[in-house]
Length: 359
Image 1 (cartoon, helix red, strand yellow):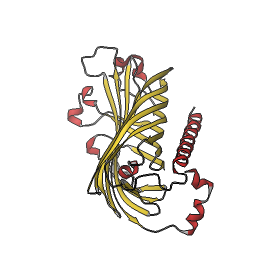
Image 2 (tube, one colour):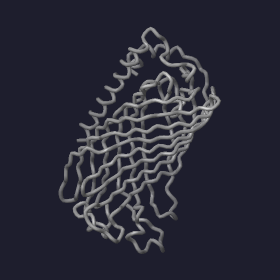
Image 3 (cartoon, helix red, strand yellow):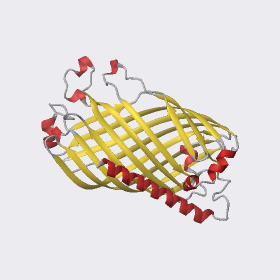
Image 4 (cartoon, helix red, strand yellow):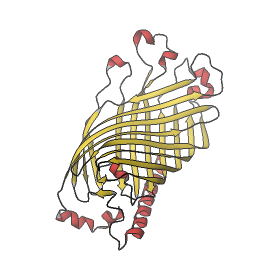
């Protein structure tokens, strides 16, 4: 199943890129730049070097809806937290690459265990559209509601741990900006554009993602399982999802330098789910909701930029018997400098290739 999902992911990404290219060619042919240069500026061929620090939280929350519960066991939440990590990001023209240091284990005194994380992504686009693709993997979760079922927690401070519990997300998200001539998405959530005056836009888009949440045994602790009925023995969850989203974005600018921005998208999502209930599987086809919320603020000058951002990506996997919300929260801080290097000869040759023109 995973290999077919990955092929669908590649096909979806390729289709979105071609759509963005065709739309751009239709609006820019013979007209030069296709935006209002009094609203924002693009740094075409500048080497941009940034240093960043990042922190990620990943929460998976379950709530059973069938049994009456007076012992506060109906809600269970498995959290993964990555330690603050530092890295470097390099940007030139349409391409960006980042390197981060390895995260260190959580302090044993917190009782939360150790979360191993892996993240890789590729973003393609300009002022008209953005295609975000990424893969995230978290291994090692702790139960945030341990005090509700473990009477020794007040004495030990030790959370209920699932060190082998692993969650992965393969995502491809496409966003088209209706007011791209005045609004630049990458000025508030990137570094190769600079918004000079305030602007807003509507967002049209969609996403395709494959989500997995698996353990080597039952996810819930023994005391909690009877409350969740059949789902009490659940060892894993797999879902292939296709969504259509609409939303809005805005960036407010002061003195052509300081800015604060944000965007929010929401829409229906078709989900093909598979629950691993230990001794059998339960397959469901459901229409639910997914969305993204992000905010950013900082200072964006001709050479120097400083960017802080907060993002919340979530999916709802609710049903009549069980509510399940997957939520990824990321905090990021970046400072950087733009070096006017011009366009090297080898890069000018690369610009003439079909590979370059594809993006």
